[in-house]
Length: 158
Image (cartoon, rainbow, N blue to C red; front, side, top):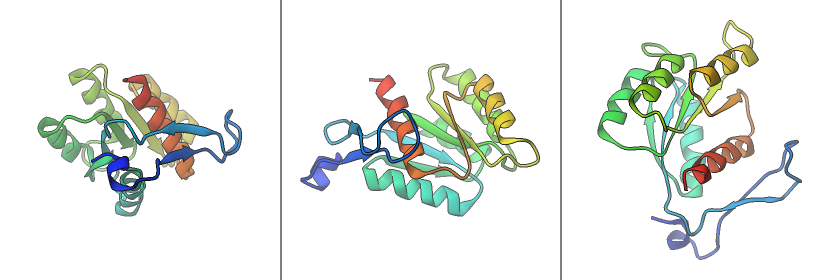
């Protein structure tokens, strides 16, 4: 269901951070677009639920997985437009998941996120980019930062 069918007012994503966009500048009007299916993969149930809730509130269809192994099973059953992956997880971690997704679907859109763990966040995220993540986010991040990354990647596929 498109946001315009749920709510007569168009939904706009707004940036309110230190990025190159000015405060309050419109990022995208998602009211007329087919809403994408996004897979969120994070072993922290609170983070997973918070991201999924934010994406659903805007109108995206969201699938959730708690680790890379479960994510691969879901990707075998469902097509997705974007995958948001935590790097440090049990079983199949985010780096391995990113590599597997890239092997199966080279054009896949992937956002990697990490709090750093035992490594420096910037090093982990740079490695994730080399493994195929199109965007990276250092935890904790603002919801606006996530939404800018989501909209940018999804608009690239249109």
